[in-house]
Image (cartoon, rainbow, N blue to C red; front, side, top):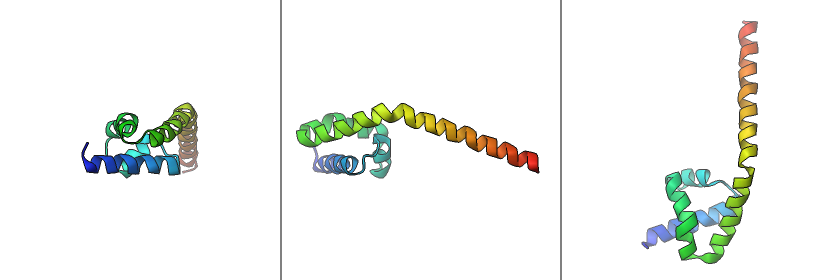
Length: 92
């Protein structure tokens, strides 16, 4: 594996463990695709550093178990925003 890939993988793993962010957010921060971030954290990290892999895996599992909650909150906020917009349009 090339050096720049190893550095990206370890940096991304450290960032995920430190912040608890999702893979999507980490992918944005490190300017890679979601697929690359997933491959980095699920396959390449295991080859590079098993201990970091276990830490990241725990965080990813927590994010996965909370995913349905974040979706529900996003939907609630979406409809709350739509209701506010409708009320404002009726006032005008």
